[in-house]
Image 1 (cartoon, rainbow, N blue to C red):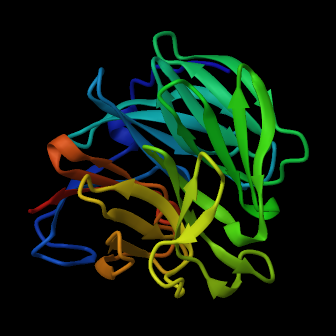
Image 2 (cartoon, rainbow, N blue to C red):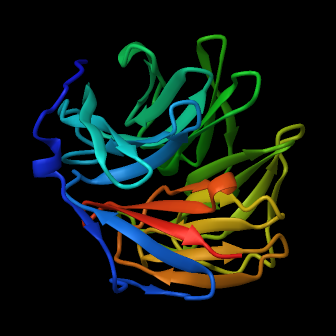
Length: 295
């Protein structure tokens, strides 16, 4: 782990203020604010309300190799790089979650804890037999849930110890996680066949924390290879489809509306309710997009 203060960030990562729209958006719902380029396979973005900036995980290589190339960037809300390589020495950091002043990231078979005040890695929690840890969500009391796509598992970290909280084929390659009151909202990738290809694409599911029952949101029809899940504070959800390059709005009834047509690799996004802003990493295009949600 190391912390790098890069003086040439602005030269290496360019901000493009967009007058026209480079992706197809529903003009009644979203307005593109900016695009920021030259990331390294950005997978997840999360907002730090206290410091009023974003953290972006960069895989920077293979998503499954322990190469030590991964890092986390800090980005301002107006699309400027504050620190390109704030935390380095990671492998393939994906999902991000905040609890207090600790930032968590899923890193292949470990959950990495980072102290935000110092920018130092404080712990690496090994998840036994994990194959592809992906997203992270945290409860108010600090319980950390982590999805493993390849094993149809959700792991739980409590008091520095991991257990398999839920293992079930009904999870259908669990990806995005959102803890919402007494439930976890799950964006499933779908029933995988060869590699990341799916015989049947995934859909949103609701998992009871109390009894671990799994229910489809809607009728269970295929929606897409789902990645990020964010609540809209009105019972619905903003959800990305990684493989097909979409941003959906999904109502609590399961009704799906496509808000954006994006490139393949639309990954784990962030929605800041009080600012009406959505940030979407484009993993294959090495970009971060910012949109305003128009109500």
